[in-house]
Image (cartoon, rainbow over all chains, first blue to last red; front, side):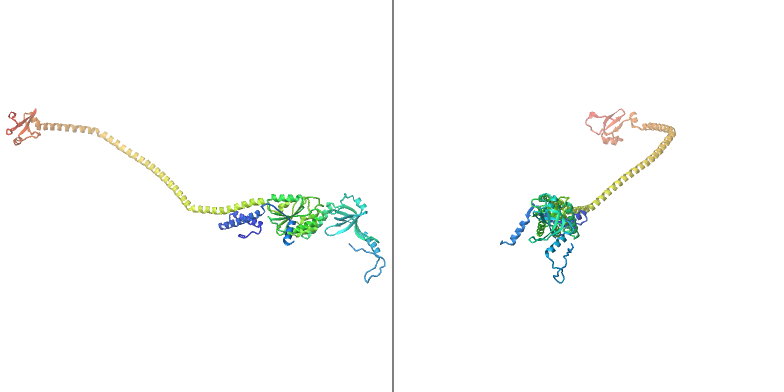
Length: 78
Length: 472
């Protein structure tokens, strides 16, 4: 999964936990450890981005307003 | 329901295959009799279109599958003892009665109705019986599993919510989401949640929300109430709609003890709006942020540790030879000290041994020397007396010989000659002048007598004055 955008937050977290388990096991060689750490940092950045996306305060929209907006954009002359 | 068997006497022949034609008024009356022979039953459903006349009340009883027009005589309705206004649109009722047919008359229109003789509001038992039947049907069709097979995102960015606009459930859901630390987008689809229009409105709202691609989960919620109040959420059409949605639906209808049919078909059924918030956002965002920080730290330590540990290991390996040398050096020093100590111990022992030997040897030599000394002393003592006497004798002999020699010597002593009146001529240096020539040659000389010395000179010697002449 290295260098690829994770499919979802849960996929990223799952992979991150795998990486940390592998690092904690102490069985990874130096090259693998460095690769895992680099991949893990990318996943942390991705997860932090996802958390930031829902961390800027709750926004409330009304479905009727959205529908009206869509209607007006579909028929700009009306 | 079997077709009514109507007998109208001898038929005319309307056609090749059917009996009749019959007079319609008579046919209508026979039909009325046949209808009234039908078995009396209990029906349950929702009341709609209530109307009243002087003699009866009429309404439709319906559910999701169909409806029957009903009528009840006013005296039967009064005997039922329903609360004032209980027979109203939306009320769930149970009625007892059977089918009836009004044949009409010259000016009155014919009509069919279910003639109710008893009516009561549907109790929970009635509703639960309907609920269970519908639940079994939905389950048999596999509709209760479809939503549960949908993947629910751990962290949805946009959530749709169907609820009443002014309900407490809305407030509770917002509080639950904020407690979760979730700050995404909520799309509200407000709908009535308790009347005969509720179920279709909710179903429509759900479909509209699910049609929006950004919506990743939908919450349907309302507060508690009686089963009759919550009955809209048991609507079969609504439940079938929920089951077929592509978006996971979280239901939180009523309180913990309430169980509506939408709970069965939803992806997750929750007891309260607060729980629905947790189900819609499975990830506790606050905890996730903390956990992410911890994991980032783990990764940093992992990288640093991997390098550091290996560097330390490498350093330890690099120090290995020096350490081994040091170890060998230490061992060598230790051995050297041990050898030195052993050597010193050996020397000391050897010295002590030699000293013991020397002591013994010396003791023996001393003893031998002492023995020899003793023997010599003994020997000396033994010969001492003889030696003493021999010595004395030799001494006496030597003394006698000496005395004799002294006598002989004295006989030759010139001094004795001088004592007998002779004089000795000597030079001023004391050299004897033994002949006249020597005296002449000396010119001046002295004459030593036994009692003194006088100066003399030869006649040939002029000397310093005449008065000074002395004969010899």
